[in-house]
Every structure is written in structure tokens, then in C-alpha cells.
Length: 109
Image 1 (cartoon, rainbow, N blue to C red):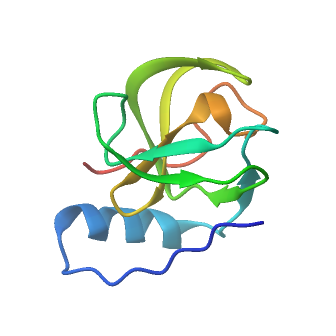
Image 2 (cartoon, rainbow, N blue to C red; image 1 turned 30 degrees about the vertical axis):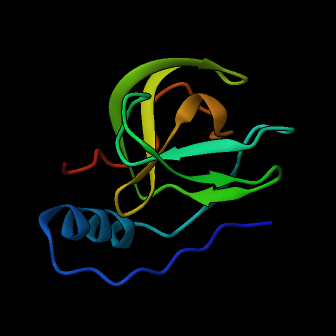
């Protein structure tokens, strides 16, 4: 199952930054950790509200990345958060990117 999201925006600065980052390179999808239902948050940290939950076996497109709360997950310990849609973030520690560092441009928050 892949997660494809198309959202209309009101032209806000965050949406423009995310769209610019997404158009800079080709979209690639990354698997979330097996057996995990992953919380999607409204910002890059556990203090932000949960806005969605990704089902086991989901894949996400990473539009941009930003530092946030440090999380330990199946793919290590990281403070990197992946923006998967405008205003929607998941911890990179749960996404199989093949890297411990940034793989996409930094988000313009």
C-alpha cells in the first residue's frame, strides 16, 4: 500500500516551501518499518498532535526533512522528521531511507 496525497493549499509559506522542495527532484517512495502503524503528526515532534496513522506496509514520499524530537525506532535513533504532505510529519527512525542522515532538502518551516 502506498500513501499518495494531493492537497489544495491556500498559498501559505509552508505549502510553497514543501511544493518547491518536492519539485526539485523526482518523487521516490520509502517503506515504513514492517509491522508498524506509524503516527503522522502536524509538526516535527511528539508534542505535536497526531493527524493521521499510516497502516502497516505503507510507503511515503518524503518532500523535505527537518530536525525535531529525537526518536529511537527500528532504523536507529534520529532527530530527523520527514514531511510526507503539507503539515504532516513522521519520524525518520521509522522510515527505511537507507541513510542515517538527510536525504532530502531541509523544510522551510
